[in-house]
Image (cartoon, rainbow, N blue to C red):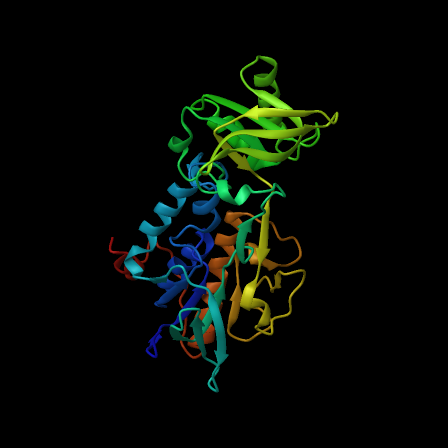
Amino acid sequence: MSDTIAETDVVIVGAGPVGLFAVFELGLLDLKCHLIDILDRPGGQCAELYPEKPIYDIPAWPEISGQGLTDRLMEQIQPFGPEFHFNRMVAGLEKQDDGSFIVTTDEDEKIACKVVVIAAGGGSFQPKRPPVPGIEEYEDTSVFYSVRRMEEFRDEDILIVGGGDSALDWTLNLHPIAKSVTLLHRRDAFRAAPDSVNKMRAKVEAGEMAMHLGQVTGLNGENGQVTSATVKTSEGDMIDVPCTRVLPFFGLTMKLGPIADWGLNLDQNLIPVDTEKFATSEEGIFAIGDINTYPGKLKLILSGFHEAALMAHAAKKHIAPDERIVFQYTTSSTSLQKKLGV
């Protein structure tokens, strides 16, 4: 608990890739940033859900992991000295008479700023827990909702439950190191990329892995260690599938939390913005990345980077309306290169 008020130019809510890149773009314009994130480290969903999963659509990186992208972004913004507030949620937002804000975290930390940037992805997020009796006692010991370190699954008998991209991707990525992999889905149709589905089916046909159609009705084991899952098949039979690790991928539950009470015009829990400034309906508050919506919106990290660049220039004009902003390129501007320490 603290009565001390920190001061900065911009508070960024969310330290995922888009929030991190916003630090860079704002830093080029001499704006200092504090970032608040509910997680205990930077990277957002990239770090939480697929730190070792390859990403293929980041420009100039034919392949990079979620953690690798986070590491490169942290290196890129290091010259601007952002301050991070991890394991925190924004609990309050108070607009001052001069148009600035005081942001309060759930630890009662207060940060005075001139601009707020919401880069919270889908808000605070948590994996959906499947309706399996007693699953809680196995969680974080032998039941996991994400893969943070692949090595922890080496030589295990893995049961993966789900039919989307995460389920199929981890089926293929963990197969080379696992003792065995079994994929379980309620029906013989998948929501994942066709190439991933075809590769999975080829491994099943070759006898390299197993696939069952049905649903988990119970877990068997003791002291948090699962030994098998009871499955009701699509034909109505009950079978036991031996496993030492269970990975249920049932999607995420997104929650905006206190952001929903900020007076913004929300559209199905997303924040409408313009495509010139990425400003919200509230003066001085901007929204970038997956949290926003506008005609033609694509939920790509690439799109969020573009939004961050335009937002930064709009934020600068909001903070210093009388200051002339000279557009510069990092390749040719000695002043920008000096800021970057190159």
